[in-house]
Length: 111
Image 1 (cartoon, rainbow, N blue to C red):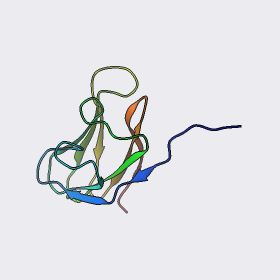
Image 2 (cartoon, rainbow, N blue to C red):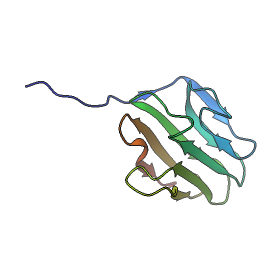
Image 3 (cartoon, rainbow, N blue to C red):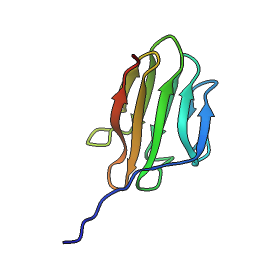
Image 4 (cartoon, helix red, strand yellow):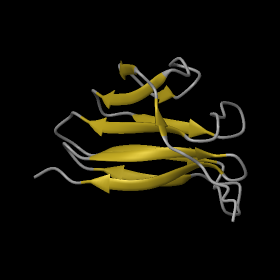
């Protein structure tokens, strides 16, 4: 039986933020790791800056405070953003799906 699906691909570049960041706009589309270095938001915009199916980005909060990671629009229904508050030292994986756009995959909390 043939299977269809998405195979995750983490790109080679790392981007350290200096302000509000949108993947693919403020970064290149080769960024696979984003290190948030300040109290600002990182956005994944499925409409204006889509990835390729399977593109995965790991977002790491390197600050001492909480930061926001947004996916817009909501991949499963409304036009608002899906948001995640990422605690100090925590990380989240975000993957691009051809039909649903950017999706949160899972988080890793700081120890």
